[in-house]
Length: 170
Image 1 (tube, helix red, strand yellow):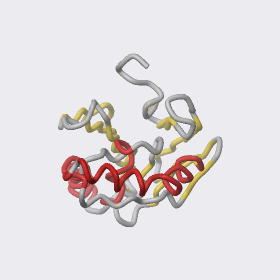
Image 2 (tube, rainbow, N blue to C red):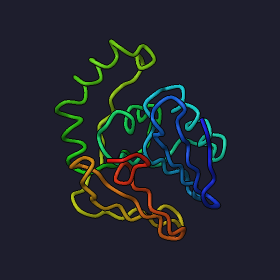
Image 3 (tube, helix red, strand yellow):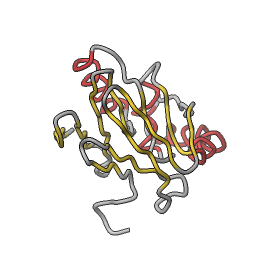
C-alpha cells in the first residue's frame, strides 16, 4: 500500500489490492479521524496501526463517504470510534449491507473476518465536526451514489471527495 502525506497532519493510504481506493487519516492533538477504511482487513489494519502508532490510541471518528464495500468494510477494526455517514448510507447498510457482505465472503476468503458496522451518527445535508483545533465540514454530494458525502478540512483547505471525483472515466 502506498502512503502519501498531503499536508502536515493528513495522510492518504492508497490500496494495492483494490482499484485505487483510498483511506484518509487526519491527525489532531485530540486523536485521529479516519475517512473511509478500505475493504481488505490486511490493508485496513495498516491504517489502524498507523493511527495507533502516531496517536497511541484508536481513531476518535470514522467517516464513511458512502455505503460501498471498499469504503466501509474496514470500519469494524476501529473499535470505539464514532462512525459518521449520511442518513442514506446507514439505511443502505442496514437494509442490504449484511446480505451483500455474506455473498462477497463466499467468493473472497480475505474478507472472512469482516463485520459490518452501522454508522451511529448520521446527517442529511451538512454537519460540522471539531476535534481539538481541527474543523471539518461534511456535506451531501450525491452522484456516484445517492448517499455520497464529501469532507472539507478547513485549516488545510483539503477536500476529501470519496468517489464523487474518480481517476477513471465515470
